[in-house]
Length: 104
Image (cartoon, rainbow, N blue to C red):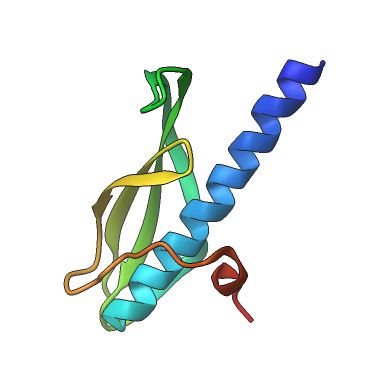
């Protein structure tokens, strides 16, 4: 029970972080973030920098330059660290301080 709860909790935290990063990337590139969410597309076990096993999660999101087109973006989190990003051009995805990550 406790291991399942820990996995579920870390999955939700990763999805929330991916959501914030995708939304911020779209805002920085001045494009429309579509569907207001990210979708988990892959999860795998990996070795973390500290030597422990952890999870690498891949998320997909969609964005539009003009409201009529749709493009897919992808981001990969290893633990809570962003390790790969494909998305709107000119976007600069940067980690923010936790108190600045919440949107109003």
